[in-house]
Length: 115
Length: 114
Image 1 (cartoon, each protein chain N blue to C red):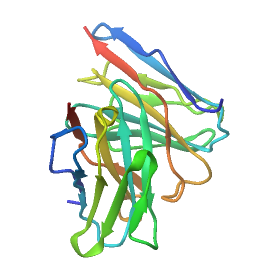
Image 2: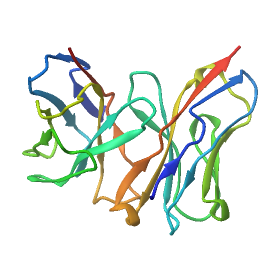
Image 3: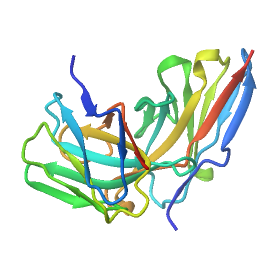
């Protein structure tokens, strides 16, 4: 079945460590996104990518980095520069060019906890 | 500031009762409008969307939403709530005014009591 796979589901990190969250899609979608979710704040956009080897910062990109070497994959690295990384992270993808008419498909999310 | 507002953080309804979740946006032009649902610890699932045309749109799981341009609202409704509807609901707006990105409201948590 086509979809988006995020791993790991749960991740614990010590302060000062970088961690990478995986996002893989087999939907043949062009655009991919990373969102951060905190209670009572909805979803906030971290980074997005419209095509391979190209990506743009979202609203809260500081302390995060991404790469898009393959169409299917869009990993997110949470660096030690991110001051409050404990959150639920959601990856999404969208077919075609970025447009309101193209609906986002979401993965099941990864919960990162900093100890 | 341009935003999407869901004024109710929590709503509790009895099973079988009707439901209305509110959503207002502050953009000038008519945007693309969405409602998503999220079960605990899961991703988001699209319930319905409005792009143009008939202002009353039908979605999955018996949900519907009405776009009211004069009120800048896109409220979600269901005539009879089931216990399985307990989840968090997000309104989202896509508009060129906000850099061609999807903007989410803060969400409304629905509790269903039996």
